Length: 292
View: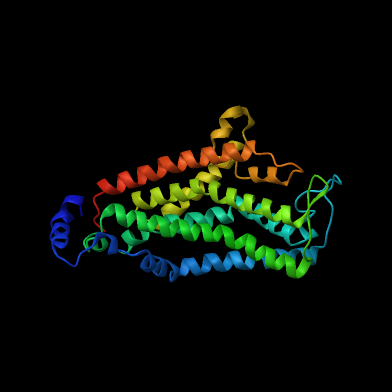
């Protein structure tokens, strides 16, 4: 169904007194629809269970120093709740959070096309730009919630098992609880920003394809390829432009004095990629011939 095909129905609806564009596809309706999806419950279930699985692993395995005798983030993971939350975020950043974000943003439009319900939404009539905007807001909200749930549950699990105290830095020394909470907020905020690239690409692919699995897999595949290329040191400075190069730049917040340069570069790269990808998504959807 093309954009011009829906214009007469939309024009007729707009002439009626009961039609208001802002009332079509309310956010609360889309939030409820997405929340009831099985993949939403499964994704959040995994993120909520993972910290307790890590706790069990530490309880079974015990604490061991690295082979070189130098502490790393895993070696100080059991020093307290904040240390444990940082470790959980570290191990999940490169894959688990990527999959969760790609799932929420890549499934949102493609699933409607797969169910052959997208054309009926447009015929309601819901303007294309509004439909895409509403779905983007909801998908980004759930993606952000996924990134936030893991460290929050890790704090709970860490506090129950390892207690509460200052953060022990891998480089030595410690940070008081108040300062550590501020740094934790910075780290989580930065993690949200760097996942924008994954979210934006997944959303673009969701618009382009009718296959949710293809959209999600394409976004995850981008991160995998980016990580492989990032390991090729011969690329030199070109690696700075890879989407995944700055994913762990938040580790600079675990220095005695925060180093901002890496996170600043990562933010610039992530936002730039996201703006371009989302612009392409809206442009593509406005011109797309929706037949499903």
